[in-house]
Amino acid sequence: QLLEARVSILGSQKIAAMGIMDFRVHEFYELKGETRCGICCCSCTWFVLFILFVCSFQQVDRLNAGLLRNGLTGEVNLESSYDPGRYLVGFWNEFLQFPTTLNTIEFADEAVEAGVQKLGKLRSRDKDGKQIWLDVSVQYKIKKEQLPDIYRDMTKLYEDVYISELRGALQRITNDFTIDEAWRDYASVQIRMHNICKEVLAPRYADCWGLQLWGIRLQAEYENQLVRTQVRKQAEQTAVARQVQTEYRQKTEVLLAEYVANVTVIEQKGQADRQRIERDAVSTARSALVTAQGDVYKLVRDLVMINATDSQAEQVMTGSQLAQYQRILMLKGKASSNFEFMH
Image (cartoon, rainbow, N blue to C red; front, top):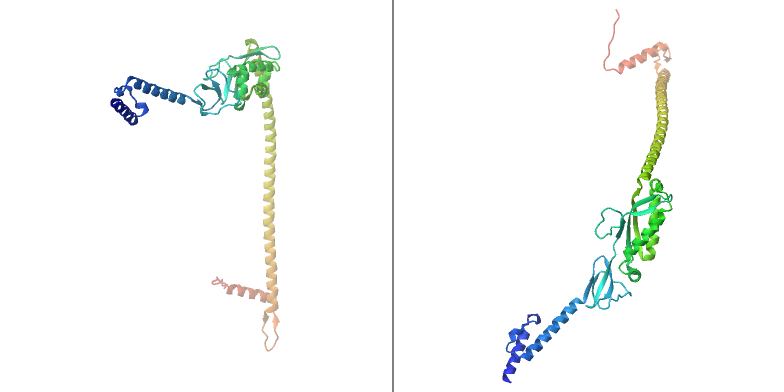
């Protein structure tokens, strides 16, 4: 009994000093066989439970949405979908993940990007029955909130369903127009194909984000004939455009000649007006000068008198006297002057 108590105390002290992950059975060689077996089973049970707890966390990757599936029965929970993140759902469950970004369906023979199925050209016939091959790219995006409906109707094969229905719908829409319309009115043809893409994907819980018609092929004889026809039409349009350009150039030259003539007339009229204004100004100045001189002459005659003497009264100056008076005033206002004496 003392030995068993010692062994129990020793085992308890070692377990307390060591973590559960540091436990080593061989270190307790003093324990009896039954005790060692019990401790080992307990440790294994806790380790298994820890592993199962860690495995109970499942993740929905970024840019994806998920549906929860029971890994044992295969049953999928269609009540709700999960956004990106980590969830505690149990180790027996797993997520079915669906990309929520833009996805591409490409009908073409060229090399496609990673994750895109290589489907080959879209083969069809136009309104006239000519066989055509189209290069078409479609971008779609599934509706995340309707993910349970997508899985219920199409499981994980929804893209194959989209491809099948788009192929049929696009082949039918090409029967409604002749292939030369794609040359003459490319934008309208692409809009019609984009609209039919929206109509096909909407009931299948997806949005048709874009459609590009980037390649058209015909049988060799039809394609060569179409090329010749289009080249001829383009040459005709070029000739018409050149004719219109020539007409506008001629009209422009006529207008330019009229403007030049008008400028010449305006310049000549301006010069005539300038000369007339200058002559009028000179005439007005001279008239004003004569008027002013007359006024001065009259003022001097009325104010300046010859002084009275004993024999006669004040007298008004005569014309010769006024002229002499003015000359004297002019000389008085000059600082210097030249005189000429006659002998």
